Image 1 (cartoon, rainbow, N blue to C red):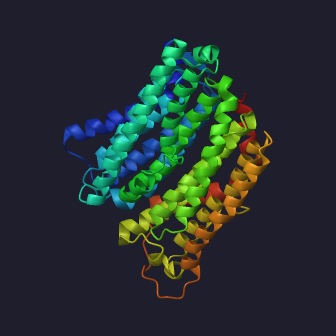
Image 2 (image 1 turned 90 degrees about the horizontal axis):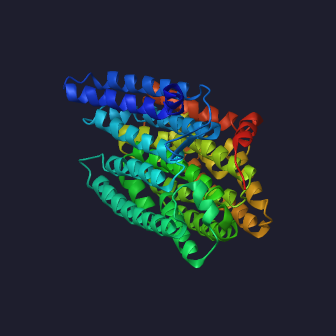
Image 3 (image 1 turned 45 degrees about the horizontal axis):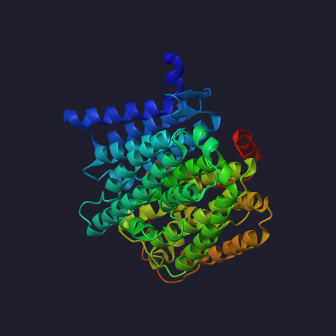
Length: 470
């Protein structure tokens, strides 16, 4: 029995072991040099990623509160991969930071919370995992202790998170009162679409919408992304959002299956508002972190568009797109992180003529932005294509047309950055930069993922074979 439990919980246990190892290093007082710590942690994260791909088995533990299957294991591996890439990209920033071990302890605590959240078969377990991930994230957003803007971001984030958690918990309480259970299997048997249950569901949906930055619950996003350290912003935009979307899909497709007609209409409205708002505000931005923040909001709108399909194809398209989004967004944020750490520059104007001295960084940024905009033959095009096809599966052709037009709008502000990098003739304000080995590896992973994932059809086929639908 214990062997089965350990195998089912291996990803959570490995991250917990790494977390306690870092804690012991901190308590011991004699910390190794930053370079040694960074290499050790990245090796441990790589081992964690490799072990995550070892075959496991489906299991239900703790009276249904925790469950795992091959799709859930894959989703956790995707988050493991993204966390490793963020860690590799943060090398320049972390090697000079005094609180290096504390950063990774908070990061791994957050990742552990995401894992339990994804495996939750009960709303109470889901909420505990959500809080375990959110509270360390608020500390990470304020990790540039000497910068007032970072502290402001942490304050805004914790207030917004507290408000969204209150809505979510209130909705869970009302749903428990209406159904008498918190388990996903029990909830689906007691939903009858009454006004009281719909009100509880809308509160829960609002909590999810806050976490994924869906309009009109997005107001915290740009300020928190701008004020946080770049690696934390990258983690927020990809790992945090991806984890919540994984749970969001699972919750809608299982616990709230009887309300499918209601939540499809709500998601259509949220998706349109999110895509339009994200794109329109991104057009006005000159700071890259804010531009990528609003681009991230737009991507949430596209993911919501795919979720509306309520089918195996919709579930597969969401997981597939999150995988592609990790490579694309982390590629762009990796360039911003390295340039910010070495020069402190973060605006589009600062990137003028970047290609003259830094061709590798220029191409990484360009290919990443092309993928985010959905330009073929990058993986982002195929990811958005599958999302739109899944959404169109229910006959929502007007809605899908609006989504497709938004892809054209997003191309404009991506091309602004690419134009500044490759075509502006002004002298480059950024000279030739040194790229350490670990960020180079991260860039290689991102470029490989963007260029290969979209054309390797078996990746989507494998995800589809594991997916769930209504």
